[in-house]
Image (cartoon, rainbow, N blue to C red; front, top):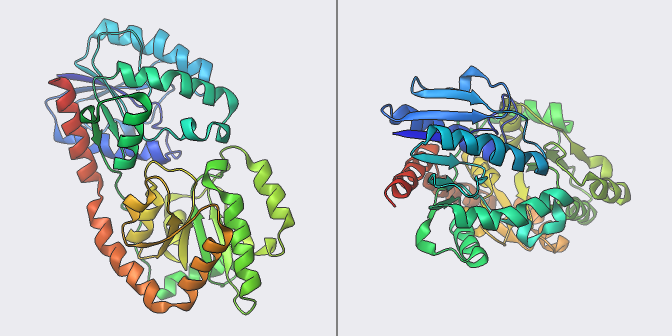
Length: 376
């Protein structure tokens, strides 16, 4: 059996949500299924660490596909001819991109369709590409994998795909996330927060992530609790649309207590999350929300949005808030600080909820989807 995989998001030291999904599931799948031949397609020179097993071959097909025009060119004029020539049993695409008008069986992982619901939250050309091509990708696919039941129903309704053809493959938790003792937490607070307690947001800085409302809610929290010395750490790189965030930040009374860390190493990110008073993660739309289960693994309580997939992933291990209501978010911060029993209850519930998610389970579910696609 020969499976070709789109691995263009496997870039050393630059793995993010879909990149981590690709890395962790494929590492386990390729090492478990040694008799299967895998070809990984990269759009640039790749690091050897991504060839996880002796049954994996890496192939570079340029150019770098990081723009809508190049997405199309790469898929239709580089990947498609390669598939037609090699005739694999399956083309697996963890980022959801497919080739059109080919008889090769294809399985995309469509993590969510946030671009359909919030088209103005991404760059203009990217939005046009996604909303034009993803319905076509969904129709071209033999089956579809996605990362939550919410996304499964959303994709089915929006693209008129039978629910029976969509498989749920939850995300897992990276091993570098773990709880810290109080001494180590104090060291982290000293480095990043002037030894003060802090709330933390983890993720990219983009309009969909609702950073402006997070900052305004924190500012309200500070106004209502003048005796508390908490900071807000925003741990992530600017993805797009930072202008609005900067404008709102400048208006806030407590802007000096909001700290942007920028992109962090895996270890630093895990340490910052583990040392937080709580994770505050309030996006407007999310297909899964990996930071929720990472916080649970770190034994940190969670405040998250009550919309899309987040209640499904959070279970009873989070305080759910309306992401459009800054007072709701601020009140949740107050509860975390002032109600130690609630905080401990969320941590205890998180220790149970997180057991539903692991990369071993993700890899198993994705492989089951692969087998269904092959035998379709």
